[in-house]
Length: 288
Image (cartoon, rainbow, N blue to C red):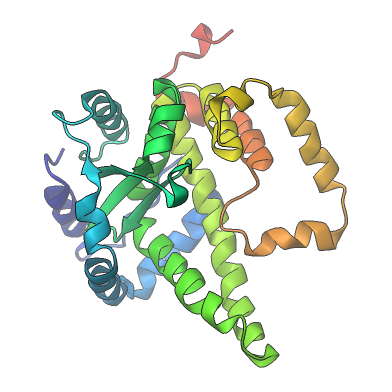
């Protein structure tokens, strides 16, 4: 296996040279896999990468250099968790940064950049609120985006939504229809990509219930509140949502992430599959 991220990218390019682009991971959501194959064959990634790399250097240069990089000397316990996830998914250890979120009280993690040059960022508050095994799930989720080559197009989707769509949304109505025509299919793929990454998180954590707890904490923002949540009762809310009208459920069409209640249900479903046991290395007989 490549020992550096640059070597990993170069090996992936060499494997794809003169062949079909690399196939998605076996555990990936089927829609995510189909979209990835389509995007890989479109041959646009080189141009998109160049635009995103230039944007990141200009818009995120100070942000990157002002955050604290996780290394064996800085936050060694977090670095060990990251290294475990990278090893489990057979990728080199990616760059991980820690810094404050907006207002300093946000639980958030994201991977930004391109498939060749990217970084993972977690907020300081997330690092404080999550137990080590829950943080392993979150880091595995972000490493899953890297392994599945989501990073370029997830970053592009972010830039389109927050830099372009938000600006034009206040324009006359004729601007809105082209925006929605692009936004809805893109968000549909993003939600499936998040399901794929949740599966990667479960594979790294080797315990889907840990992932469920982490997702609830991310939703509520405080570990003390998450202790009061009955997961089964929370899932029952999802059934009520499923039975609600189209105009209620239709709001999800532009969401970049599935509702947490759906993510938990899908995570539990994946954890009962043979694919989960094969990918995670968990012995089914050891699970009661």
